[in-house]
Length: 262
Ligand SMILES: NC(=O)c1ccc[n+]([C@@H]2O[C@H](COP(=O)([O-])OP(=O)(O)OC[C@H]3O[C@@H](n4cnc5c(N)ncnc54)[C@H](OP(=O)(O)O)[C@@H]3O)[C@@H](O)[C@H]2O)c1
Image 1 (cartoon, rainbow, N blue to C red):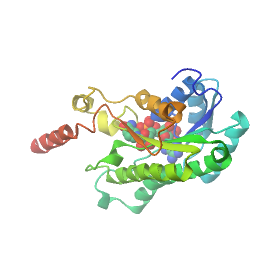
Image 2 (cartoon, rainbow, N blue to C red; image 1 turned 30 degrees about the vertical axis):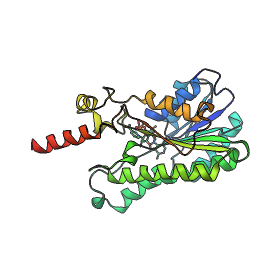
Image 3 (spheres, rainbow, N blue to C red; image 1 turned 135 degrees about the horizontal axis):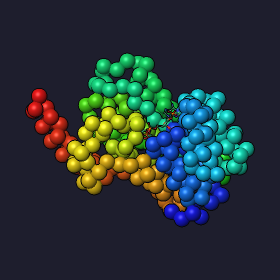
């Protein structure tokens, strides 16, 4: 992406104080966009924004807080004058284990942050700017939304629904607004630590591209989907996983070997 690609455009990235959101904000900024980074605390959002550059603004806004989201949209328009790109990236996984062992509180939190927040922020961005001027929305889903597994079932259900929501919004908001998603595999972030920290070599070993993901791997793909380079793509989910999905047999073999060793 060249410096001029997104010049004059403005992006809001939710959940951008670290990890994939911060990498996406940096990539969008690098391509010339003004960027607004959100996180649950103003302090973390502001620190992240100052690490990105001069056309960056940090705003504290819990992803499911409607009043905070509305204020963030207003402040973005005041500061930069448009909202051309929305990256619904904030996500959570408060619950491990079988779906039937989850309680309503954790299930509701997962669905609220991973599914309701993208609806809330999309609605606000569309009403405030994109509905009249067009735009591009990118949702951060997961390969978990395209597969099933033993320990993250509730999270996977929320990401599968987000992939479906991406298609639904693509038909509701086209042709002015494109809506796409990324589906990362295991990426080196805090949220995913349980998936890689203790066994990175094993995960890398069963990844065809030989390593786990870095936030920038996903940030650059988000930037592509936000930009005109993808102008005839909508409703799609782009898998960014070093080949982890196509090598699912290796993951199953590893699980069987682990089970056999107990
Ligand atoms: N890492 C992976 O392997 C992986 C794979 C597939 C999909 N994903 C998805 O990628 C997205 C980003 O996660 P990550 O891996 O980059 O995790 P991360 O490094 O832990 O970053 C999560 C970011 O979201 C913010 N955040 C968390 N809850 C929030 C909320 N309720 N409202 C606003 N901001 C919130 C956090 O900031 P504060 O703590 O300051 O609020 C932080 O900036 C998530 O949607 C996740 O499901 C990750």
